[in-house]
Amino acid sequence: MPAGTQEKPRLNETIEVNGAFAESNDARHDPAELRRRLDASGYLFFRGLVNKAQLLELRRTILELCREHGFLDPQAPLMDGIYRGGPFPDNHREYMPMYRKLQATAVFNDFSHSPEIMALFGDLLGGEVLAHPRNIARVSWPGDVNNTTQAHQDFHYIRGTPETFTTWIPCGDCPSELGGICVLEGSHRQGFIKHVPAVGAGGNGIATRGMPYRWLSTDYRAGDVVLFHSYTIHGALPNRSPDRIRLSLDYRYQRADQEVDPSSLVPHLTASAKR
Image (cartoon, rainbow, N blue to C red; front, side, top):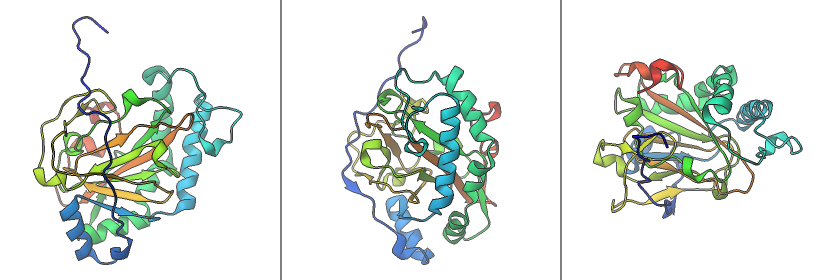
């Protein structure tokens, strides 16, 4: 550790999931009911919302880049996403060159405008929808517990209007062994909470011990979507599989006539997008 620096704390022990998401497919074409559920719980969950074939083509694109950069076991089927083993890739020398290529691919950026997602947000927001260009892909290595994303609110990073919503999409089947996202049900009602430095992806977080809410998650299938308010506290569960990489997508949406921070209008991890 460089002189004069301190190790960031781990704010929360392993998150203990207390329940499963309530599915909202039954209310997909009832905007008033969807808004009621979103206001009450801070999230909505849909099974099979997005086109599975298109999603798996995006998965193939990401895994081809991972293979090109030596992250996959060359003897295993590509779509299984089997890690090469050994030390995790160095973030700057190995991972970021791959991620910059991913950020430039049309299939990754076009997926944020999937008609199913845009139609859903058109109903929810009741106006013209702005899909943020700052799209994010997550690659989680098996056993890399220290880089698991801590509990946080997306508003800490995106600013602009609080009425911004994130969609989290597993890029392939994601059983609990692979981790995936979990949401602290109803936590958006507390408003914005000051974040502090923390170990894990993102580098900041919230201590949630003692909060009167349940952590929710599920075994995800390709095509599922979770969306949540920018104040909803959420985090990742660790990838505890022995050898499989977890892939997921973060896309964000708001009404086009509301405030947007300039950092949300440029690609992820570009110089002007950093805080």
